Amino acid sequence: MFDLRCIKCNAYYPPEERIYTCPKCGGLLEVVLEIDKITVTKKELDSRWMGVWKYREFMPVSETARIITLTEGGTPLHVVSNLREDFRVKELYVKNEGANPTGSFKDRGMTLGVTKALELGASAVACASTGNTSASLAAFAAVARLSCIVLLPTGKTAMGKLSQAILHGAKVIAIEGNFDDALELVRQACDEMNIYLLNSVNPWRLEGQKSLGFEIVDQLNWDVPDRIIVPVGNCGNSSAIWKGLKEFHAHGFIDKMPKITGIQAEGAAPVVHAYRDGLDDVIPVENPETIATAIRIGAPVSAPKTLQAVRESGGVMEAVSDEEILAAQRLLAKREGIGIEPASASTIAGLKKLLESGEIDRDERVVCVATGHALKDPEIIIKSSPAPITCEADIEKLKKVVAQLL
Ligand code: AN7
Image (cartoon, rainbow, N blue to C red; front, side, top):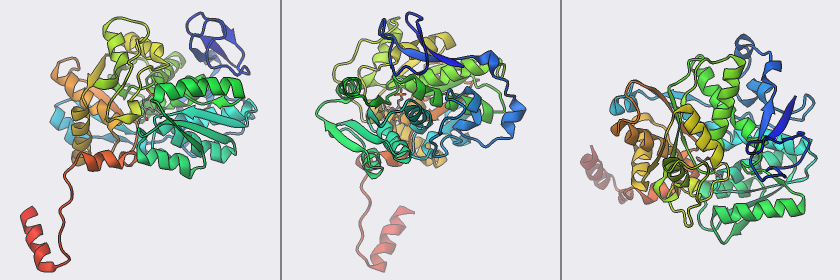
């Protein structure tokens, strides 16, 4: 029903093989589904609950798999009219992935990834993470009763994410280095210690993340938006959305494709550079730096997939500054009541920048993917905002203070 294929040398491998990259050439793997064998109809889908497993036929696990789920997916697609007016764009939506069980889009991949870990007989799972991946893996591994090891860059993981990993019982190891160092280490440790790796280089995880693209077009009544804007870190999400929509297209569910548009933070923008220089892969950025710690990544593993998706779809890559990110985070929060973390706000900042430069047409229908919840990183909000006004516990003094604020 499905196989693994190397996107570089086109070698095929059976799904039982516990590999993450091509044993022959080291290329990235992707799962190949037999789309022509899928018979599910839109009408049939309409009768099902929202969520990742609504699209069961596109999720490559065996019929008898024990599915580990926290009821992920089915997140709101907000019509953001205030922001649409501010930006003077025809249609604007925010896909709020902060509404997932652990507060980020990673849950979509982990339901598939941890289900696959059990199928393959793993007893321990691991990942390196800027934070959200570890929070999500910790929760799903807990349900599956798997040992869970997570490697985090010391001092650079947002408090909300770190506390979730601890809460759900992961064994947390703070690596004295950045995310790229941690990923290199965990890949080697997994290979040598028979632990199942659940970073997004794992092709099965991306199969769950495809559902983000599925849901966007489903929620728009199968009317494909002109553009989907995604924050880009390790390049898993952007490439998964593209893969999913290509499958929907091949199956006949949609008849056109959106432009995939990827946004990075200026201090961690290797994919933007590769895009501009016409390269097929990135030249790693040595010391990536941004307040959007989720995407503080210098050597993204799946970059070739994202570069291909952006180019094939006629999209674009853009970088935004930390100031622009924080301003966009505040704008969405204040105009629409939606709190998202800085990495997610990069999409709003990117949209603004690309509208101003004329790269995005004001006549477009645009979806920004807000990948994680604001409470993932409360510290950055406090740090970048004025301190609360203090007042003695006295009604006359309070009235004076309040009068000044009205
Ligand atoms: C909120 O958790 O890489 O391009 O280790 O947490 O698929 O990597 C997080 C990435 C965007 C980038 N938004 O997505 C991790 C990690 C948020 C994120 C991204 C991440 P990819």
